[in-house]
Image (cartoon, rainbow, N blue to C red; front, side):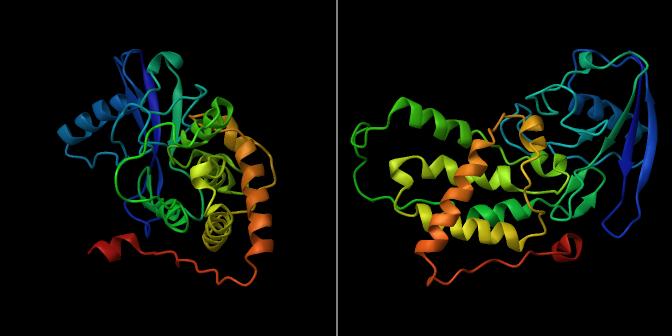
Length: 266
């Protein structure tokens, strides 16, 4: 099949950036979107041109490294599928695909399709832990957990932190991501001791980043490759309100966002 990839090219955060068109012949319908970019990059390298920069790691839809917009949809047209698992059979022969990076103030541009998503790491670091006793490993059934609760926790824990929820949200909010990271611990008895403090700190860090406010539009869950439910946002808000009431005297600390990726690494 023949395709035209119209890809956003930007050498660095300081460059203006623009779309570049790359006609491709003999694209296999069995290859993934990332494999299609691999083929394109081999062609560009043979021609002495700069290959397209994009993130990837496991290519099994579980690491959250890959992700970009295809024709205005985060991760492309196939629901609950990352771009590394999106096969080219979902596109038509002769189609033009517009490929661009996540667009959000909290995700500064680095190069081409690569953006800086360290804001997510800082939110997790603000409170994504539980206290555990050291020593011998306890028996598996010491703390019984009902299946319904375990399922809710696992549904939230499926979040891979790809950033599609932020990119799809008109407000560039990170409520679905933060809610998932709070919920997968807070619904379990093991996460109860730090439940309130964790929610307050993680929401405070989310607000300290350049994310927008959540208005419950729902685009985030519509494009989420792991189908994280909107329920996690309600859990986050509930825990945050309760934690804020209980912990009003506690000092809330946040980490300042780090900017200037290129200059920092040089």
